[in-house]
Image (tube, rainbow, N blue to C red; front, side):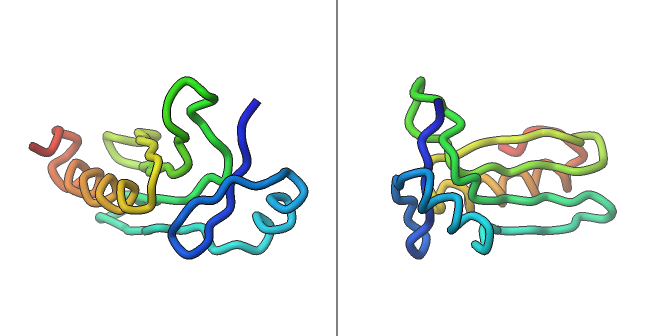
Length: 101
């Protein structure tokens, strides 16, 4: 079972499912959203822990839509990690799918 989180500013805060269900409906959850040619790179706050207790909470996700890295994703614990991960993924897309050093 996953834990529920909301954002207070850029900080993820664990909450109960009832508060989460109301919050998630109207929340602005985008960390970054960018196009490189016809490829979209989107980073969002998920609101649910996708680490499922096996790691630190994974609450943010970057995903690629289109191009050679279509459906590539990375997940993060904090907003700051998500911002950095988004930049890294954009660079990977710009290089045509080659890992950024």
